[in-house]
Amino acid sequence: MEYLKGSKVSEYETGHSAHPFYRDAAFFLHGSNSQTQTNIIVKEINGKWVKFTIHYLNKEESEGIVPMMIDILYTAKLK
Image 1 (cartoon, rainbow, N blue to C red):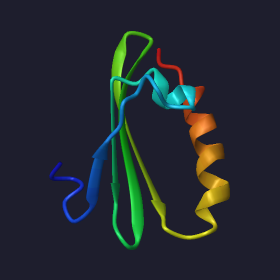
Image 2 (cartoon, rainbow, N blue to C red):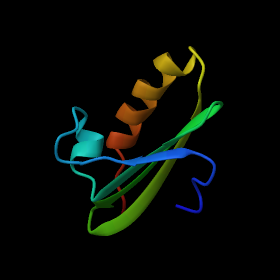
Image 3 (tube, rainbow, N blue to C red):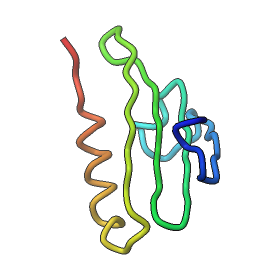
Image 4 (tube, rainbow, N blue to C red):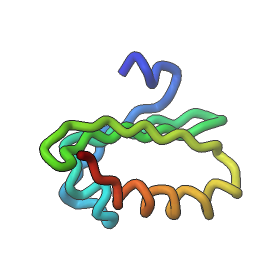
């Protein structure tokens, strides 16, 4: 929560998300303010816990980039 200070913070239910990257996460927080959006996701990959922090600007350009970035993160594997 300290990391998202100054943002409106929402915790999302992970099992109901449309995207599988979020659906199988253990934890999903979203913070937003007038300039940025931040997602903090904690999930298990190959038996290891990983925290993803995704920052993006509140700009039209982000609408095209963010979905592709999340698709790429969904393919992450750990050794």
